[in-house]
Length: 446
Image (cartoon, rainbow, N blue to C red):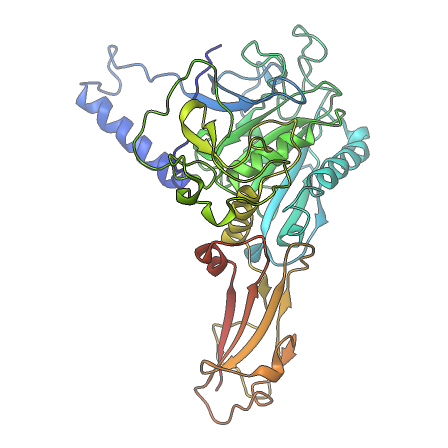
């Protein structure tokens, strides 16, 4: 076991990052004189994965690096197979087109064919718990959710209750991963193959059939090459606090949030440049922090927004917005307001509040009804729909979900009709983020 604290850096697009890493590895191998096929050819270094795990229901998370190529106990001795064809894919929630939504894929491990109903019930329970947390609650309408019924040969997962227990499961879920009891690893290659059965996958949850507390979080750069999703979170099905693992991991993969905890002995933050994450700053003065617009606000986590020293694994020289939050410890069940804003920005980076069944790529007739659909957002969200012709607002049409160009006053061809939506939620204070929460569709009239 080798625990390492890795400072939060801006995550590159994972497909590009893997391609670049592979290219550099090839160049390095040739530069070092390694020739394919020769007996003295360099042995490729062992590939590792950085994962986050959670020592207990109320504990601060930890980072650990584990071998990526070692099979989990539940899949030991099995060669990787093709994409499975038998598991059923069930639509749990569909609020809009795949192209306009965050697609969350939930799959179970350690559930036999006779236990697939139990998996569906466990998945629903976890999802409902996660979506009780803001801003997931208010923005649930930006998600499609798919359940993938992975059928395991045996019920349960390896390492439950003790390290010597080995069970064959579809995704190789195993506690005691790399000797750490609460670290619940999976065969990420198998996860990728099963996730491909869903219409799309932006985020993947694995619900392990176990009452033992545990889980893990995998970020995109540490997943197998070709994985199309942003991250994977694992959690046990029978523990009533394990859902917080998924909620925390989405903070990384959707909101780009850094961990707000620190490790004893790590000392001062060693870099001079401002961290990319929305929830860390070098500035001690709250008025100079990137969240200055929130300074002094009473936060839902219980403290006042300011600058609290420690975060990103370091003890000094770096500051977080609040005393605690879901990104610091799972004892907290709330994002702070800075985290909420980053999460909403992340939602809108991958999803659209405004969609339409009428294509925008082809001209439309003046009598053609232009129908639009707003994502079913609630709570914090405040969507406003407006219409314009050639950039000129049509005030009387505000809020209409269907209208013809002719009714908007269009006469002749070549005019442009635009439907636009803005989210005026009070949860967004940064003008740049508020701008990203706006969306529009434009049709040309023929």
